[in-house]
Image (cartoon, rainbow, N blue to C red; front, side, top):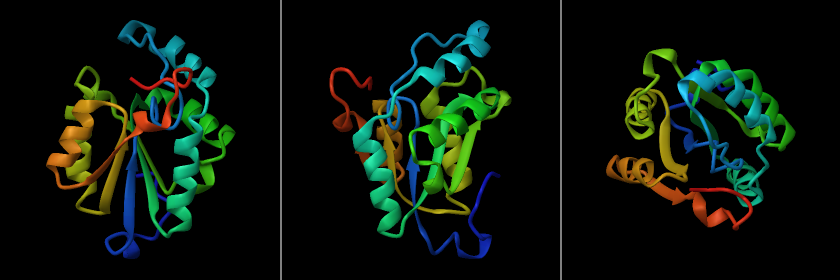
Length: 160
């Protein structure tokens, strides 16, 4: 677990679950298993989605904690941290989870459902912010307040 928060307060604290690609940074197209390393490097070219960056900071200022749950696999962690620092949200990242290799090839919404089921045992997650309809529907079915990240994007900022 990559958590900066004391375990004793996690259950009381309200947490926001964030996606990364297409939500906080522009989506990087072209991932395929045989291109993982090249794709990981291409993620460094993703630009910030300013509305989402502002919302990460705003939620933090309102007292929420932020969990970033990405379908990027663990081989992309170094680039993810670098990008989150570059766009200015790293100080507001309280936990960061990448897709473990054992979940490679599983649809994003199924992987995120599995992770959410695990994370909700530790974190009081109240909101989920994502750009994919299947993920949003799954989080809504779990009783979370969902925010469709596509409302943050313009034609040149990505989103799906």
